[in-house]
Length: 100
Ligand SMILES: [Zn+2]
Image (cartoon, rainbow, N blue to C red; front, side, top):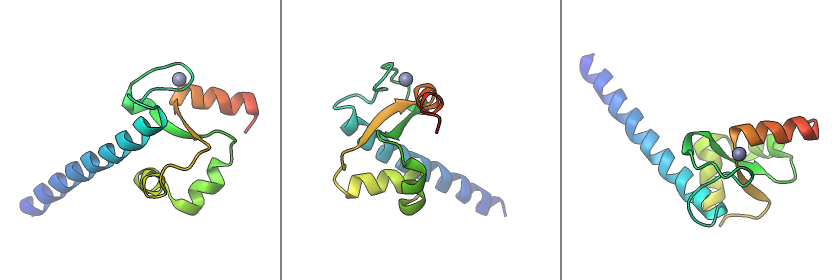
């Protein structure tokens, strides 16, 4: 039992690191260097995410997946255009100002 728990913990950690690597790859591509918010310039990876410039993110994410799956999709589709890096705050502000 303890062993299984330890294994689960290790697996979770490895998975997390793996996801972070993909995220970093994708974000640094869209930021053309060090990942940063396209609006305010914050570089805190924990609050950065990919934004659909013209909206429609909800529908698209439903099709291709969330989180790691989404970053992998971008990576394997050779970084399609129409996306940018935004931080959580700017993403929220954009949504509010667009009313979406
Ligand atoms: Zn920002």
